[in-house]
Image (cartoon, rainbow over the protein chains, first blue to last red):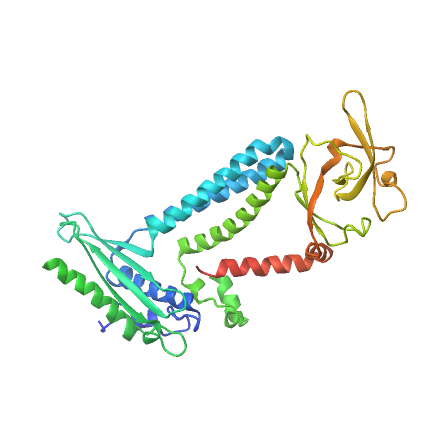
Length: 198
Length: 190
């Protein structure tokens, strides 16, 4: 096994480069960094990813779109003046659901883009939870990634983070360099593992 | 995905950034579609909300002809309200639809008759027309009723409606613009 958790072919060689981003596009580069960190944790360390957060967002969005679709169909079947009460209800419902969605994204999800479970090898304690969140403020290139570890057996919460300008991890074509990024993420992971042992 | 391969083959992925899309899993792709749906839904809800607020089935209309010059020109955007309680008076600018015809007409009320029961009938004429609208009404129809009226003009924005007129004259252009916008929403990740 080579020095990397993720096989090199998967990361950067071959025709379909997995972690290729669009140079100069800050959000594309941030998304690539997030996806790469997620791949390291889920495919590399083999933790089990939890989809609760994004499923919640999908469900609320789906509910909002259904309100709108229902209003559309009802109004088509019963032309305007008759459909007034239903339309009022749908517009109010849509507004409420959209507010719930915003609340979900601001308070529940925050900047979290991955949550994964590490099961106890002995099978005794409940799963430990790894949470990754990241932040890229506007008009800067300083990317902050935070890894949080909640120990299943003790319940204690620990986190470490690192902030660097994104350019240190990318090459001139916008390809994320495995040799630069993977060791950083693994270092954060190992720091938390060693804290757990203390 | 097949679409990605086609776009790669014709070189389109150097123009449109597809890297983010290639990497998306099922849930993220579904979220992109829902995002598009949310934008469409928001526009729809704003429109329906306006309908409810103004009481009119078409709260915003575009002036299509020059029959109301110099008050309104072709391409002006009109804001309508349709409050049932306000009686229609001579001089009001009404937007009405003739039965079985799609296109609303924006003209001024010139005669109003009311019978003992309160039923109203009225006659309209465009300011810039020589004759009244009886030639435009359905065969045999001499007057308009309250139910024909979609609303009364309460405010307007000049020129903006030209976009709608162009889109309707060249439907292919409209579909192209919508397709391109839709594509960008679907591909762009937060």
